[in-house]
Image (tube, rainbow, N blue to C red; front, side):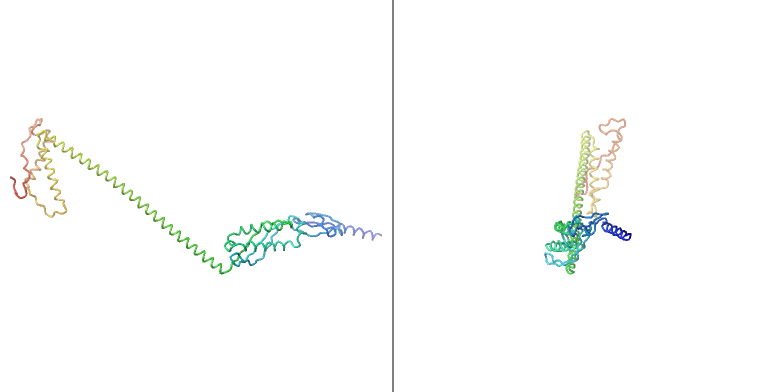
Length: 332
């Protein structure tokens, strides 16, 4: 009897321990009662009577990665490209994932592969290479909608690699090179154009500054001529007043100054090799003497005729008459 009691106790303990189920974090177990789903075992310690209840499926509730194998796809413009991708998904309902589809991983792989062919087959080669984000978004929408009934959430679908044929890759390389050379020529021509524009602007500004300089110089020349004319008019007025007052020295000075200026112009003329004076040297000396007499009269403080000074003027010889004509040779 004692042995029988020990055996019964041991079987009872074994029966109780066989009903204990420990579920790891990130997993859920489906519990079946005589083959029919009844409940889910959550992470932690669970107890279900053995022989009546058993674990059906162990479902991974964490986000998982499924690799889509490479495949050949014909694009809209009849280009053959090799494509492979990757799918990120997470099981949200363990019961549906276990009993709504027989093989969840195979189903997701086949569904993604067929939709990848559909999406990329409706696009040109250039679009498949440049619009990966659009391809990923369209695949995500279609696959996520199809797997919703399986209790699965598709988080991301990514095209991992696109492999065009070798001849197309070479053609694309030549196209890229031609495009870059075209851009270089355009940039060079734009640089030359900008340089010519800047050069023309500089020449324009230079011409404007030169014109302004010429205008300023013309204004200054006109002002100088105006002042010279005023000085000439003032001198003429002074000489006229001196003549009106009876002084002959002023007119002699004026005539002598013009006479000397005329002779100096002969001397500096570039066309004259030899100068013939139709006058005698004594006449020029007499003229210069008249200029000196005028200067002494001015410094003495009065004229010979109407002076009011205390010292009487010294008698002076009259200036010589103007030069005779060229054919006479002597004064009349």
